[in-house]
Image (cartoon, rainbow, N blue to C red; front, side, top):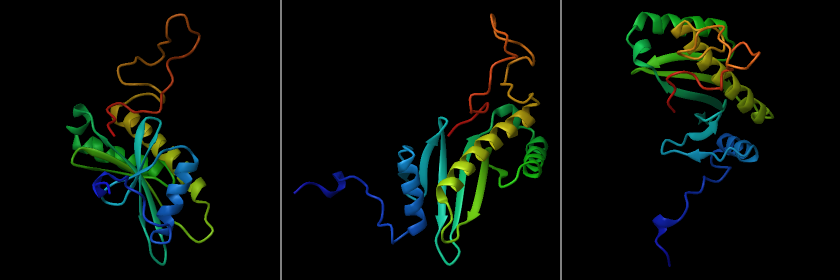
Length: 177
């Protein structure tokens, strides 16, 4: 018999955590290769960023999809700007909220998941809006134009290109996952 600690970590049975099981199924079907962390959160990669899903089971199950990013020093030093940017993004976007704790930006989208809800669409839309929210947050905090990256001069086009400038690649400046 082999050492039990060498066995893979299998997720709990679906009936033990039904919503989390549905989330895992959706992510596996999408090829996201999700993992469970020690808190029971589901972690997966989207546009090279780590996104988490925390599920609270109960009469009204709640699914919280969120990402965390360490703030760049030049942004974290200005607490008033950080809080004003959170407020501005929170008022600008639907279904997403931002906050900062210990110089870590958290962008989250939360849903009450009723029976028959399309979990796949909720996960897909939430992931997209979270990534858009963190990009918007960094643009606003750093005073960048939409799609501009840190260090780029607005309107500069790459050499030999008719393009107005490089497109955002889905990650914001200073993002750590």
